[in-house]
Length: 539
Image (cartoon, rainbow, N blue to C red; front, side, top):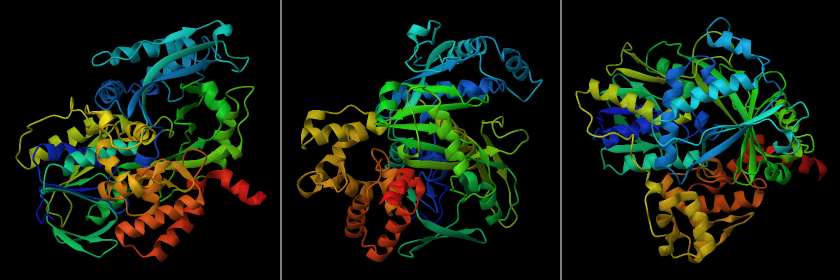
């Protein structure tokens, strides 16, 4: 492990990993650490979309929308195995109503929007698509006014339906691990560690592995604080005092509802909840994702999803189609994360979504500290590039390459017929890992081809690969960030026992500790959903 890396990155979320990738590809020695797992926090609780930010136009965030649309198109072009075009349907109950208020907000005379109208949306979509025309443009929007051509079951008040295109990230965590793989592939001058503790001792950062107590001492030239909701807390730990963040927690429900899934027909629906606030619901595999809420919080560790949030999202999605009911029995899991928005006034909904790079010198800390504030999934590459440019300037280096047109590892061409596994397994591996299926397949033969108990679409070899190649250390790492086991019909108890067995074999972790992790997962409503609770009550 490096003792004097050029850069130490604190935080293994999408912005920290993007910065690590950019720096590593430009020959910079860097180490990334996270006290939890990679891709935890807000990075694992997104709406799974690569979008230009249509609603940000109303708040005049033109630079963010232009950057987001460009980065969305690049993701679809260079990570097409995990990022796909997504049609988004918008039912509208107003042709002109709310248009005047939208214009006033656009002009900066009010912070408050109104109900979405066809007139406002039509104008916004024309501008939105203009921003996205520069690289790999998506199809143009279309508008339907004849009810006979509306999707079945929309509310009788619906007067028009618009449809436009954005992107969907089918596996956000997988995209992050591909970036980590690229960074680590640059040689021994790059490292990434999860599940570690750290503290500052003068100019030295002392890092301790959570599981085997191994210690590392590092004296970096630059520290990058990419800890998301923890940024201000981490800066305090480094000796400074900042107030950069406004924590806004957002929850999503994951539904198992075949009738709703069939009606949506592979499309997302973006609709008014009845109060002027918009809800997004989209297909994720065989499931439906519904979000999101906005709850202000000052606790970076807050992962609770309130009954109010659950009831709000259920009420909204239950009202989308008049002939399809949705209730708690359809919830197989939930996600929640704290968006690290820039501190400012106004409501959580109207808060700025753009990112900022703040540089500080703290007493007793020789290295400058760069804080990555805000940001969103779609713009991670651009934000990482901006942070890397600042670092390169501080250490007196010049950029040698750009990631703007770089293909992600899983999107590389490969011979699918060369996979030495049964066709059914090969199809699943390619869908999940793209070209990296070539690495996973050799572990999915013999005993490794056996299906996980309670999760027949996953084989044991995939779990072994996730531990060896993607640093999974805990059961939650595997359930939430290396697989999609919390989707489908819901996480099963017997699946957890299989995961614990494989983890014990691969990591030599104490079975008692793994048993405690199983108990924690079974008691976590995020992972088990409300369906499991209802079934237990019936039993």
